[in-house]
Length: 380
Image (cartoon, rainbow, N blue to C red):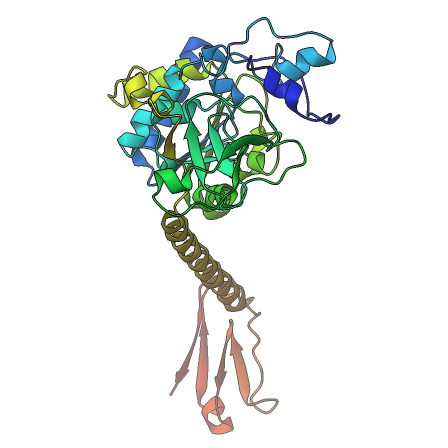
C-alpha cells in the first residue's frame, strides 16, 4: 500500500507542521484568480511547476500533512482511510494537464517532491522533470549510477539493494558494470540526487513564473526552490488548501482543489486534458525494465549556461542601477541663498547653485536685476 512508504522510513521526530485547517476560496474568487493565472501563463517566457503530495490525493494516495495526512494521523495513532497501491494508482487530471502543457511548451519544467511515479506514468519525458525525493518505479545502479524504469513499484525505500544486476549492458549495449540496482527513494537523512537538485535550482531561477501545486513547501531545500525566481523579477503562485511556508512571498494564492484549478486553467487556455493511457505509460512495457531514466548531462549543461547568463546580466543591471542611483544623489545640489556682495569684498557672486567668477573691473560695471524667479547679471 502507498502509505507503507512512510512506514518504511526511519524514525524522525520533526516532520513539520501537521494538520493545519484547510481554506477554500469561493467560486467567484477561484474564477477571478484562475483568469489572472491563465493570463500570466500566456505571457510568461519560462514556467516551472513545483508539485507535492496534494496533486496525487485524487488518485487515492494520501498526502502527509493535511488534516487526514499520513503523518497527521500517525501522530494520533491512526492510519488513512484511503490508500491505493502505487501499481494500481493512475495519473490524475493535474498530472495529465501538466503533460499536455509540457507538450504545448506552455510550461517548461516540473520539479517534483513526489515518489509515486505518476508524472513518469503520465508520459512526461526525463528532460522535463526533476524528481528530488526519488521514484518508486525507478531503480539506480550503485556503480555506474544509471537509472532504469521498472514495470512495478519497488518494495523497499531508503536506497536499499534490490538484489538485481545493473541493466546497462543489456539495454545500452555496453559492457556490464557489475553493479547492483537500488531503489531511489530517499530516507530522511539522505542527500538529494545531485543532478536533479542542480537542474531544479537553475530552472527555478530562470523561471519568470514558478507555480506550486499541492505542497506546503515545508521540506528544504525543495520547498525553497520556488523562491529563486523572485531575485530576478519572477512571480510565485501557490495553489494549495493549507497555508504554506511562503504565502507572504507569493504573488497569487489559490485555495482550491488542484484538479479543479487545472481544469479551469486548461479551459481558459483552450486546451483539453488528455485521458491517461497505458500506451504512453513506460511502466506498462512488456520488459521488466522498459527504459533508461538517466538525466542528460547535455541538458544539464545547457540549462547551466542559460543560468550563468542570467546571473551575469542581473549583476550588470544591478551595477548600472547602483551607478545611476549614485549619480542622481551626486547631482542633487541644494540651492544656495542669493547674496549681494560689494565689489571690494570679493571677486565672486553666488547665483543659486552655480558660481560665476568676475574680475573686479567687470563687477564694477555690473548691474544686478532681480525678480521672484531668477537673478540675471548683465555687463554694461
